[in-house]
Length: 212
Image (cartoon, rainbow, N blue to C red; front, side, top):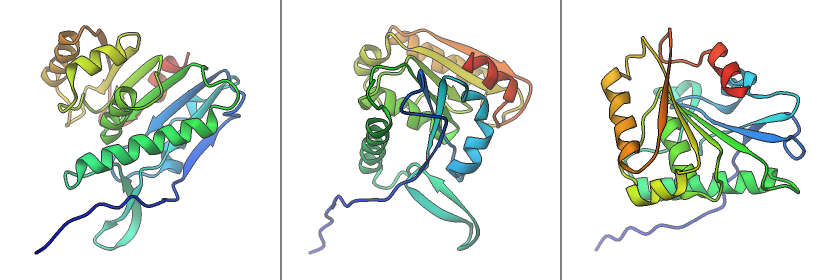
Protein backbone atom coordinates (compact mmCIF):
# COMPACT_ATOMS: atom_id res chain seq x y z
CA UNK A 1 0.00 0.00 0.00
CA UNK A 2 1.31 3.44 -0.92
CA UNK A 3 0.72 6.31 1.49
CA UNK A 4 1.51 9.98 0.98
CA UNK A 5 2.33 11.99 4.06
CA UNK A 6 3.21 15.66 4.46
CA UNK A 7 5.98 16.78 6.79
CA UNK A 8 6.61 20.40 7.67
CA UNK A 9 10.32 21.23 7.67
CA UNK A 10 12.33 24.41 8.37
CA UNK A 11 13.37 26.35 5.29
CA UNK A 12 15.91 29.10 4.74
CA UNK A 13 14.24 31.81 2.71
CA UNK A 14 15.65 35.12 1.55
CA UNK A 15 14.22 38.53 0.90
CA UNK A 16 15.65 41.84 -0.19
CA UNK A 17 15.06 44.88 2.03
CA UNK A 18 15.64 48.42 0.77
CA UNK A 19 15.62 51.06 3.48
CA UNK A 20 15.29 50.87 7.30
CA UNK A 21 12.39 48.47 7.61
CA UNK A 22 12.33 48.63 11.41
CA UNK A 23 11.89 52.41 11.52
CA UNK A 24 10.33 53.47 8.22
CA UNK A 25 6.94 55.09 8.37
CA UNK A 26 5.45 52.52 6.00
CA UNK A 27 6.35 49.21 4.40
CA UNK A 28 5.89 48.17 0.78
CA UNK A 29 5.92 44.42 0.12
CA UNK A 30 6.45 43.37 -3.50
CA UNK A 31 5.86 39.80 -4.70
CA UNK A 32 7.73 38.87 -7.88
CA UNK A 33 6.39 36.90 -10.83
CA UNK A 34 7.04 33.36 -12.01
CA UNK A 35 10.69 32.63 -12.76
CA UNK A 36 11.99 35.83 -11.20
CA UNK A 37 14.27 36.37 -8.19
CA UNK A 38 14.05 38.90 -5.39
CA UNK A 39 17.20 40.90 -6.14
CA UNK A 40 16.38 41.78 -9.74
CA UNK A 41 12.72 42.40 -8.91
CA UNK A 42 13.72 44.72 -6.07
CA UNK A 43 15.72 46.82 -8.52
CA UNK A 44 12.65 47.13 -10.72
CA UNK A 45 10.56 48.19 -7.70
CA UNK A 46 12.93 50.84 -6.32
CA UNK A 47 10.41 53.70 -6.79
CA UNK A 48 8.42 52.12 -3.95
CA UNK A 49 11.27 52.83 -1.52
CA UNK A 50 11.78 56.33 -0.19
CA UNK A 51 12.90 58.50 2.70
CA UNK A 52 10.20 57.11 4.96
CA UNK A 53 9.23 53.98 3.01
CA UNK A 54 10.96 50.62 3.12
CA UNK A 55 10.70 48.10 0.30
CA UNK A 56 10.58 44.39 1.15
CA UNK A 57 10.84 41.81 -1.63
CA UNK A 58 10.47 38.21 -0.42
CA UNK A 59 11.68 35.47 -2.73
CA UNK A 60 9.42 32.52 -3.46
CA UNK A 61 10.43 29.29 -1.78
CA UNK A 62 10.80 27.10 -4.88
CA UNK A 63 13.85 27.91 -7.02
CA UNK A 64 14.56 26.11 -10.29
CA UNK A 65 16.70 26.30 -13.42
CA UNK A 66 14.91 28.22 -16.15
CA UNK A 67 16.46 26.17 -18.98
CA UNK A 68 16.19 22.41 -18.53
CA UNK A 69 18.52 21.95 -15.60
CA UNK A 70 21.02 24.67 -16.47
CA UNK A 71 21.45 28.40 -16.93
CA UNK A 72 19.69 31.16 -15.00
CA UNK A 73 17.69 30.41 -11.87
CA UNK A 74 14.18 31.62 -11.10
CA UNK A 75 11.63 31.00 -8.37
CA UNK A 76 7.96 30.08 -8.22
CA UNK A 77 5.37 30.65 -5.50
CA UNK A 78 3.41 27.48 -6.22
CA UNK A 79 2.22 24.94 -8.76
CA UNK A 80 -1.04 23.03 -9.05
CA UNK A 81 0.60 20.02 -7.35
CA UNK A 82 0.13 20.20 -3.58
CA UNK A 83 -1.29 23.67 -4.01
CA UNK A 84 -3.09 23.88 -0.65
CA UNK A 85 0.12 23.06 1.20
CA UNK A 86 2.17 25.49 -0.86
CA UNK A 87 -0.33 28.30 -0.27
CA UNK A 88 -0.30 27.58 3.45
CA UNK A 89 3.51 27.53 3.44
CA UNK A 90 3.98 30.83 1.65
CA UNK A 91 1.31 32.61 3.69
CA UNK A 92 3.10 31.48 6.86
CA UNK A 93 6.43 32.50 5.35
CA UNK A 94 5.22 36.01 4.50
CA UNK A 95 3.69 36.37 7.97
CA UNK A 96 7.07 35.42 9.46
CA UNK A 97 8.87 37.99 7.30
CA UNK A 98 6.54 40.74 8.47
CA UNK A 99 6.79 39.67 12.11
CA UNK A 100 10.57 40.00 11.87
CA UNK A 101 10.54 43.36 10.09
CA UNK A 102 7.60 45.06 11.77
CA UNK A 103 9.81 46.19 14.66
CA UNK A 104 8.33 48.04 17.60
CA UNK A 105 5.40 49.40 15.60
CA UNK A 106 3.49 46.53 13.96
CA UNK A 107 0.59 48.91 13.21
CA UNK A 108 2.55 50.89 10.62
CA UNK A 109 0.89 51.21 7.20
CA UNK A 110 1.58 48.26 4.92
CA UNK A 111 1.12 48.24 1.16
CA UNK A 112 1.32 45.05 -0.91
CA UNK A 113 2.06 44.71 -4.62
CA UNK A 114 2.03 41.47 -6.56
CA UNK A 115 3.22 41.11 -10.14
CA UNK A 116 2.02 38.33 -12.47
CA UNK A 117 2.05 35.08 -10.44
CA UNK A 118 2.85 37.22 -7.43
CA UNK A 119 -0.52 38.99 -7.79
CA UNK A 120 -2.39 35.87 -6.65
CA UNK A 121 0.20 35.42 -3.89
CA UNK A 122 -0.30 38.98 -2.68
CA UNK A 123 -4.08 38.62 -2.78
CA UNK A 124 -4.07 35.37 -0.82
CA UNK A 125 -1.69 36.81 1.78
CA UNK A 126 -3.95 39.83 2.26
CA UNK A 127 -6.93 37.53 2.81
CA UNK A 128 -5.35 34.59 4.68
CA UNK A 129 -2.38 36.14 6.48
CA UNK A 130 -2.00 38.25 9.61
CA UNK A 131 -1.21 41.53 7.84
CA UNK A 132 -4.00 43.90 6.85
CA UNK A 133 -2.65 46.15 4.11
CA UNK A 134 -3.94 49.61 3.39
CA UNK A 135 -3.41 49.11 -0.33
CA UNK A 136 -3.30 45.98 -2.48
CA UNK A 137 -1.93 46.31 -6.01
CA UNK A 138 -2.47 43.43 -8.45
CA UNK A 139 -0.18 44.05 -11.44
CA UNK A 140 -0.38 41.92 -14.57
CA UNK A 141 -2.29 39.23 -12.71
CA UNK A 142 -5.84 38.64 -11.60
CA UNK A 143 -7.83 37.74 -8.53
CA UNK A 144 -7.46 34.03 -7.71
CA UNK A 145 -10.74 32.18 -8.22
CA UNK A 146 -10.50 29.85 -5.24
CA UNK A 147 -11.08 32.08 -2.21
CA UNK A 148 -14.17 32.24 -0.04
CA UNK A 149 -16.09 35.36 -1.09
CA UNK A 150 -17.39 36.10 2.41
CA UNK A 151 -13.88 36.02 3.83
CA UNK A 152 -12.56 38.17 1.00
CA UNK A 153 -15.24 40.78 1.61
CA UNK A 154 -14.62 40.85 5.33
CA UNK A 155 -10.83 41.04 5.19
CA UNK A 156 -10.44 43.47 2.31
CA UNK A 157 -13.29 45.90 2.95
CA UNK A 158 -11.02 48.71 4.23
CA UNK A 159 -8.30 48.00 1.63
CA UNK A 160 -7.69 50.12 -1.47
CA UNK A 161 -7.47 47.65 -4.36
CA UNK A 162 -5.77 48.68 -7.59
CA UNK A 163 -5.54 46.55 -10.74
CA UNK A 164 -2.60 47.68 -12.89
CA UNK A 165 -2.08 46.35 -16.41
CA UNK A 166 -0.32 47.22 -19.64
CA UNK A 167 -2.39 47.81 -22.72
CA UNK A 168 -0.15 45.39 -24.66
CA UNK A 169 -0.01 42.69 -21.99
CA UNK A 170 -0.83 39.39 -23.76
CA UNK A 171 -1.99 37.85 -20.47
CA UNK A 172 -4.60 40.51 -19.69
CA UNK A 173 -7.66 41.81 -21.53
CA UNK A 174 -10.26 44.48 -20.84
CA UNK A 175 -12.75 41.67 -20.31
CA UNK A 176 -10.60 39.83 -17.74
CA UNK A 177 -10.03 43.02 -15.75
CA UNK A 178 -13.74 43.83 -15.88
CA UNK A 179 -14.52 40.32 -14.59
CA UNK A 180 -12.17 40.83 -11.63
CA UNK A 181 -13.75 44.19 -10.83
CA UNK A 182 -17.20 42.59 -10.97
CA UNK A 183 -16.12 39.65 -8.80
CA UNK A 184 -14.79 42.00 -6.17
CA UNK A 185 -17.92 44.15 -6.38
CA UNK A 186 -20.00 41.03 -5.68
CA UNK A 187 -18.22 40.78 -2.31
CA UNK A 188 -18.85 44.45 -1.53
CA UNK A 189 -15.40 45.66 -2.59
CA UNK A 190 -14.43 48.44 -4.97
CA UNK A 191 -11.36 48.14 -7.18
CA UNK A 192 -10.00 50.67 -9.63
CA UNK A 193 -8.26 49.72 -12.85
CA UNK A 194 -5.11 51.54 -13.91
CA UNK A 195 -3.70 51.11 -17.42
CA UNK A 196 -0.38 52.11 -18.97
CA UNK A 197 1.12 51.81 -22.43
CA UNK A 198 3.27 48.69 -22.35
CA UNK A 199 3.31 44.94 -21.97
CA UNK A 200 3.76 42.41 -19.18
CA UNK A 201 6.19 44.45 -17.12
CA UNK A 202 6.46 47.05 -14.39
CA UNK A 203 6.26 50.70 -15.34
CA UNK A 204 8.44 53.15 -13.41
CA UNK A 205 6.10 56.12 -13.80
CA UNK A 206 3.15 54.14 -12.45
CA UNK A 207 5.26 52.84 -9.56
CA UNK A 208 6.23 56.39 -8.59
CA UNK A 209 2.58 57.39 -8.66
CA UNK A 210 1.54 54.48 -6.45
CA UNK A 211 4.30 55.23 -3.95
CA UNK A 212 3.20 58.82 -3.61
